Image (cartoon, rainbow, N blue to C red):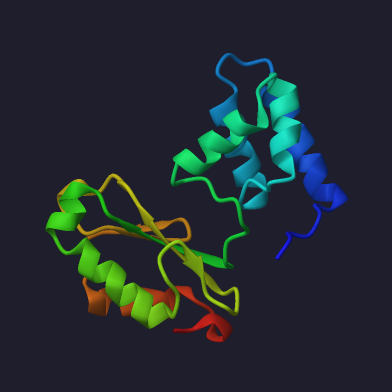
Length: 164
């Protein structure tokens, strides 16, 4: 399925991010972060705009987007659930927690549920290594999360229409 073209307000946000970062040394990463912060993802339609502005190839820009797990090339669900998979969290059960989240949320890792309510993302380090396993739901970090605690957090974080 071909993505819908970006609307004028979103194109304007991309242009604003380009204008704010194009003259910085090493502008690509801060620019990609700015676009994702503004839109929730880095749309494929923005790649040629960014490449032209920074005098890079589209392949170079796409390569950075696809290399870093943080960047999304598709819009996320209305709520994003991130489960840390770094070594400390893995040692404390993060893989089992991630599998549990897949079952409870009804979507695979790196995926968005069919109703668009939630996106599940494995991430590498949320900075709570001493309190593993760590989860971030929206902008809130949670430490020492068990499967039972995850279900409670999800029930509190998702609206009734998005409930697990």
